[in-house]
Image (cartoon, rainbow, N blue to C red; front, side):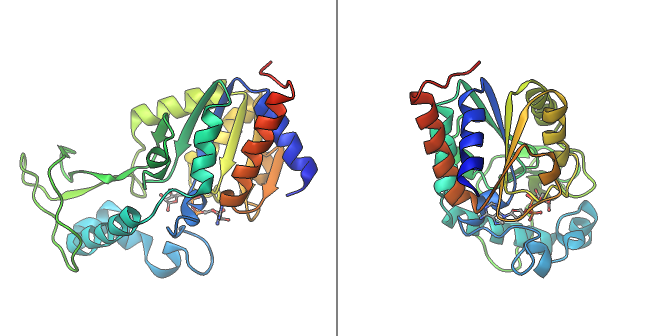
Amino acid sequence: MTPEGMERAARILAGAHRVVVSSGAGMSKESGIPTFRDAMDGLWANYDPQQLATEAGFRADPRRVWTWYAWRRERIAQASPNPGHHALVRLQDIVPRLTVVTQNIDGLHARAGSADVVELHGSIHRVKCLDRGHPFDGPLPPYADDQDPQPCPICDSPLRPDVVWFGEMLPKQATERAWSLAERCDAMLLIGTSGTVWPAAELPLVARRHGARVIEVNPEPSELTHAADVFLQGPSGEVLPALVEAVARARSAGASPR
Ligand code: APR
């Protein structure tokens, strides 16, 4: 991350009216929540996504999948938003419009105070039933090893996490809103995603096609770095607070949305 890159990114954001953040699992890494594809400790390095993040995997072994998500829900409940999440909350008070579109299901953006969050892949904190999608807002048992999912009180089919599994459609309303925001934004801040999962990976390309500037924050280049106007290499928990500070300085020095 060079000072020139940081200044350039700050100027882009300080001059933007409508900013969209597109975040992935890297955003929550510094909250102690593993990503999916980081070589050593990514979730998919230790677990089989086909068994744990597909409907077929759930139907084959509901207890295993339900328990795995209960374990993740417990870990997430013990985690806290990190300085990167808090920096985005500060940024929403600096730029005129900011929406966070996230692939993350952990709810940390909202817990930090981000006011406008679109969850493309659902939420681990929400539960619905497998066959009819009936939302379930009753109490969930605390995590225990080898738990069976409860039956839906309406149709008796097993409860499942309200997250998007591989091969499933993204929630219609969230998707429509995310693409509409990407088409109309002046700047997209792309944070902590490998850019390997579609259609979420298309968002920065949509923004760029419609004239937005794209700023990427990631310790490593991703599949989307080619589409970034500025690549700020580093962990989001460090880069974002410095970037937002630079935006605040640029705004107080007179930079304003064009
Ligand atoms: N700060 C920012 N980014 C980081 C950090 C960090 N501290 N640490 C790692 N990263 C980056 C990695 O370099 C990688 O580019 O975060 C990215 C994580 O990539 P993935 O694990 O593939 O996560 P993501 O892109 O969110 O996955 C997309 O895949 O399994 C599905 O539904 C799941 O939403 C998920 C989707």
